Amino acid sequence: MSKPIGSYPRVCARDDGDGLVLQAGGVLLVETVRKSGLDAAMSAALAPWRRPRAVHDPGKILLDLALAVALGGDCLSDIGVLRAEPALFGLVASDPTVSRLVDTLAGAGPRALAAIRRSRAEVRQRVWRLAGADAPDADRQVIVDIDGVLVVAHSEKQDATATWKKTFGHHPLIAFVDHGPGGSGEPMSALLRPGNAGSNTAADHVTTTKLALAQLPKHHRRGRSTLIRTDSAGGTHDFLDWLTSRGRWLSYSVGMTITDAVHHAVLQIPETAWTPAVETDGQSRDGAWVAELAGDVLKGWPTGMRLIVRKERPHPGAQLRFTDADGMRLTCFATNTTGTAIAALELRHRQRARAEDRIRAARDTGLRNLPLHHTSSNQLWLEIVQLALDLLAWMPMLALTGPARRWEPKKLWFRLFSAAARLVTTGRQRILRLGVHWPWTHVITDALTRLQALPNPG
Image (cartoon, rainbow, N blue to C red; front, top):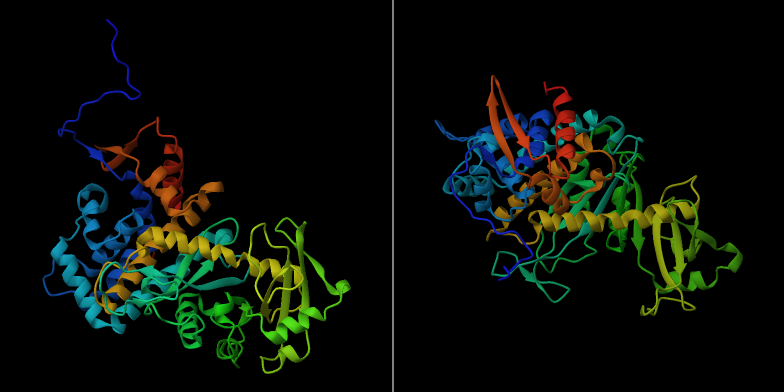
């Protein structure tokens, strides 16, 4: 008599496990909070909203929410994942306490948001100093990417309206600092807007940029060392005039709409004036060329603006637009950077596509849905999402090396944070014993060693 053989082993489950810690890899985020001083900064920032004789610190509650989102949560009640592991995350507030604090901070409006943002900016400077050569401003330039993102609402929420993509929800405008090809990126600001907010709204771009600049170290808040990069939604007179106003003098690389005047000017460019576009390795980009426009198309725009156009053979099956010419797809952007070849400037602007990676990571980290009803509460939720994304950017920057530095949230959850361990108390130490068979155990232990070697804040 033959016995049936299945594809997977058969196991039984019991509820008598002792000393096990789930989400053990979350210790990397906890240690990042400790070494960056974010816990102390957030506690001090939200001290005005702590009630007398309150057991739970508002700063700790908000950080717990950010940790829950960083571990994959997408609503307030997901903080229960942390509450289940007090040995790792400490004392965690109950759901009613969390809800009351969110209502209180949302009711405080700009005061609470400003306090949270100040503490983030303060801690960010320390983290960048600790990162050294891996910091985003290691080459003395910071690139800030601004882009809009549609967040679909599946129920009636305040300011949720029809969007230009025929969906229903909100249209936030978000700014990220680019970490370059060797890293990811971190959020600077997020402006919650109704779903019908226009893409080319200069006032919203100005507000988002102001909030983003306030997150940077002071020497990067003005001057050519800070580059503002957007798609064609930022290509407006008012926004470029604000970027280049006296005393600000920011660098920019902004996509522009192909108008009739630009299209006519492109047709007048001789073939000898086109330069092959380049790839990141310095090799020519097949089927793509760039040229610089001058003359009447620059009238009325800020002094020193350069208009660079690219033509490229469209990929098979692509639909050409009315503004395309001779079977070539046309795009253009404006910049005030001088002394650099136009092919290198075009490559730099094309790398703005990394902002799409940042948006995808944000969607996976609490931005796929705004879970609360009121706009003020959802704006606070955006601040929580940004805190979570900060931690997911700072931890790899300070502790991971090689390809792991570029891992997006889903991969971090699957490989690092979801690891289980056994908590052992010996002497004055508490040790997490990770499974030796887990392929990424050495990544977790090496990263934790690097974090613990950093100096303590203060």
